[in-house]
Structure formats: structure tokens, C-alpha cells
Image (tube, rainbow, N blue to C red; front, side, top):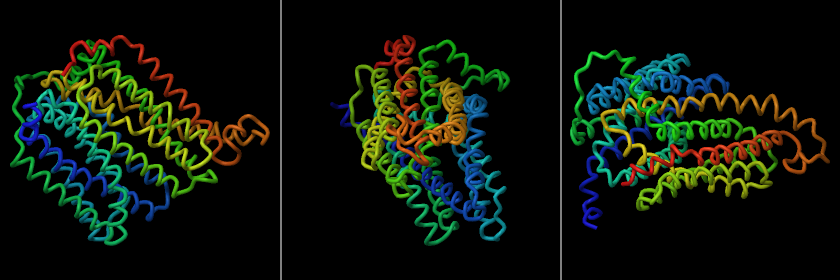
Length: 433
């Protein structure tokens, strides 16, 4: 009881870091969304706008392992300050190009690649800083708060960016981004002081140092297997995201409003899940919570989108599919954070980022390929009296509906397979908080 009463004071440094960094992330997300609007208006091509995300994501996947090794060698606070400053300078350069009327698409590709590289180095340093600022007993609560800010960002950034962009243009969105950066930078500089951890002097090459994260995962099979579990889930989830517009925008009861509503419902469900995760006590079995939350997500939304014949069923699926994800993330964060030594977390988290997220671009490409070249052409050959038409209807979008049914089974199968992994269950022996 006493511990709960002192929680605000105990978590004060983390709360300052979390709130200001979340605000800065909102500003950055608004700029990213506004740049998508600008690029689409300038080029009218979905491919060119998609490349903005590719340029941001490629450094993250390719360089994470090396970034983690560097992060463990460097002071966490200084690393965050330098990376945030360099990313802000990229944003400032875009503002200068906007003001002079010389902004071109390749400028955005270059700026996004540089910002993505800075984020690759900054994130493992930030993850370790959170560990150093947070008592072990509050890991789950902190994970819930981080999921909360992620959910709010997903809900608010597109609406705020599109509104401000329509009213005052790209310049106003970028200025808001720079203001939020300044608030986060000054708060981190003057108000947040993560404890120092020993960083032994070493002449070990960066490549060899980066391998330490992989060696740790090879020796700690439970942590490695749960990362591979999430990588498999990310493959299914990214195929889901790639195919979602092909389904929702083409069905008779779908359209742009339906797509926006589904995304809003997903965001509200994640917000509810984040609030729940931040308030729930530590469970007896974090592994069971992780497995059950992912099984709920995989066994609901895919099937509702595939077989549902109206928007209400789709929205119900979106709510069921996303409400448990923040709870899963909070428990996964607490489980891994309590297991990995703080002095290794930068390298281990960086290795985790590469292994867990490399399936996302693969899934996006695979999902689009399956819809365009396999499922939609196959559905077009089915007659109105076929079982396919009975299950998914006819016309454009019925092929994507069939893919969602396959994704539902794939997701459930993935959850059931990894649920039998004894290395994952062994994490319970040493992760009690």
C-alpha cells in the first residue's frame, strides 16, 4: 500500500520523460502524415508516398543491431539529446525548403532516411533509460502508459495533422512539430537524469560488440523464442494492413468512411486496453496473458472482416482485435525488461528490433501480391452459386475477404504453435515482479 501511495513521486522522472517524448512523437507523426498528403497532392502516386515509409523503416531494420552496440557504449541521455537534435534539424531543413518553394520528393526521402537512422540509435537508448528510471515493481504500469501514448498518437495524429494542414498548410504542421521537440529536449536536458550504469572501456569492434545481443538471445532461448513469436505475428499483421484497403474500400457496405471508422474503433480499443494495462496488477503468469491476448486478436478481427456482411460486424472485429494488444505489450515489455540485464539492454533490444520487425516489410509486399495476383483473380473465376460466393460474396473485394480468412487461420495456428514452446514458459521462473 505504501508503495502505491508513493508511486507518483517514484515515477516522476519517468512521467516527465514519457509525457514530453510522447508529445514530441505526436508532432513528428503529424509531420509524417502531412508530408504524405503533400507528396500525394504533388505526385498523385500511392507508390511514391509509400516510399516515404520505406525510407524511414529501412535504416531501422538494417542498422538496429549496430545502433544497440553503440547505444550501450554511450551515455543514454546524451545519445537521446543528440539523436533528437539531428532529427529535428532534418525537419527544420524541410521547413526551409517549404519556405523557399524548393521542396521536392527526393528531399523527403533523404530526410526520412536520416530521421529513421537517428530513431534507430535513439530508441534503444530510450528503452534503457526507461529501465533505469523505473523501479522493477512498476514495469507493467510503465508499459501500459507507453501503450497509452502510442494509442493516443495513432488516434490523434492523422486528424490533427489533416485539420492543421487544411487550415494553415504544411508549414504550420512542421512548426508544431518543432515546438513539441523543443519541449521534450528542454525537459530531458534539465529535468530528467537517468542513473549511470557501468560502461567498461573496451576496444572491442562495433561488429563484435553488436554480436553480444545476438549471443545473449542464442543463450536465452525463452527471450529469443518470444521475439520470433512476435515476428511471426507481425508477418500476419502486416499482410492484414496491406490487404485492408482492398477489402474495405471495395465492398458495397464499405468505402472511405468505413475505413476511417474501423481505424477509429481500433484506436479507441487500443486506448481502452492501454488504460486497463496501466491499472491492472501484475498477473501470476505474464506468458499466459501474452499468449491469450494474441490469440484473441488473431481469432476475431480477421474472421469478422472476412465473413462479416455489414459495417457493424467489421467494427466489432476491430474492437476485439485491438483491445488486448496494449495488455500484451505491457506484459511483454515487463517480462523482457525484467529478464535482460540493463547493461546489455541496448544491444539486446536492437537485436530484437531487427528480428521482430524485419517481417513487416515482407508482409506488406506479400499481402499486396497475394491480393492482386492470386486471391482477387481466383475470386473472379468463381460463379455466384459457388461456396466462395456464399462465404465472401462476389465482385471486387471478395478475393481480399478470402485472404482475411486465411490470415485468421494462420494467426491462430501461429499462436497455438508458440503456446507449446517450453522455452517461453520457462521465462516465468525468473520474471516474477
